[in-house]
Image 1 (cartoon, rainbow, N blue to C red):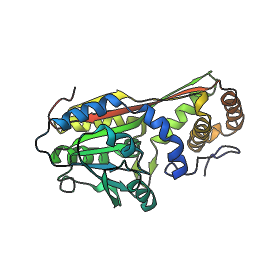
Image 2: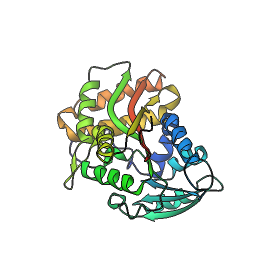
Image 3: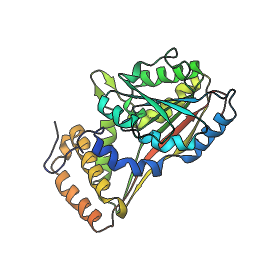
Image 4: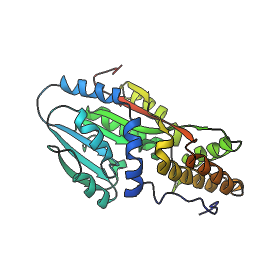
Length: 282
């Protein structure tokens, strides 16, 4: 991998079960529960009493379902979308008791309004920033046309605050943000631009969006996650800006020492979005 340096590596893949398990408590603490409450209220007042049908896009091992299902009313059936069949299989078997689920293995970026017919809620967590502008536009159009609610959680905003500060914080942060906006196989990822792009896309289709901050707040109780996040953050920054490679190992050692002493605090900015078909959800 270009720009990789000693002692700095990605924490496996962002979608390995170990990484997903490590981040799940931080994700659960960060998600905007007030948006889930608004969604629940909308569901309670919808017409009919048929079971809620929820499509979880990029479900991973099912952390969004484990967090959200208990916050939604009534009987629920979940459709779990992911490219990785092993992850989907884990997710299907770990939803709360009483929730039915079925796997949907494949490319979720091709979903259209016809495929969303009968869906009550579309949700995703830590996915939106991995999409392109065109893919976000298609998702907003499909959800708006199908008339389903949409809850998109944990989209990165580009804000990272480390305490205590270090002279190289801003350089690594800027390089990481640029990496998040990289082009892969002709696809330019939105990265930190995803949340405003999604709000604008839903707006073009007549659906208002309410946003809420959902930052990770990591500290002395999160050292294993902090360490893995740091390694992945630095690896991505070095890949995008190889000139940072010489400084990365010493920076990592300083930051790991801060974490080991219980002194390192990191706030990683994310945003959650809720779009409801019945007008402005605010």
